[in-house]
Length: 231
Image 1 (cartoon, rainbow, N blue to C red):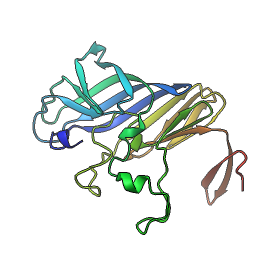
Image 2: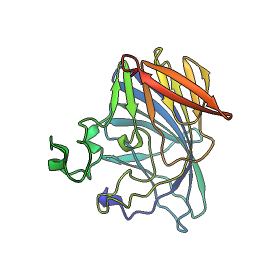
Image 3: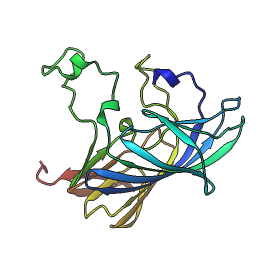
């Protein structure tokens, strides 16, 4: 993260994610709309993606672009002039590498089995789940490409964020309940979430949940309970 911290970066204006899971592996296609609001030309486009996910292609309007990788950093050989916009389509697949998550948490804090004075509960040992029967992916796992890193090791409380208009399509969830941000539509085998407002990130949760809803004054509230845990 520190190596690329000072490099100027584009902004993700919109991001459409097409997600498919097979066992512990995921295969995803992202369509990104980027804008260069830095006031200067960008010699290349920098993105962040979980190092366990292999980038299979990066295209602009159907034409392949040259790209390379340095751990969780992906660079695309495409110059962006100041004020330019760019639409990229990228494919990536693999398994989540949890070692890249929350690197700002010190090893002694992470492994502490007793309650510490700085927190009310212990840190968990897992940061992402992609398994048959259960999936949990949060922005910190870098399960989709972002223009900004999810954390800043040099200054823990100064992590920059983009506000992006997301849509998420989940294919063949194998009868699991699929939970994410945004308005839901589609069929049980082809589910689409579309956000009405730009968000700093998006999460995906799939599992054997039962859903309960109640509408109060035209507002619908929803709670999803893992079966066997409906206390």
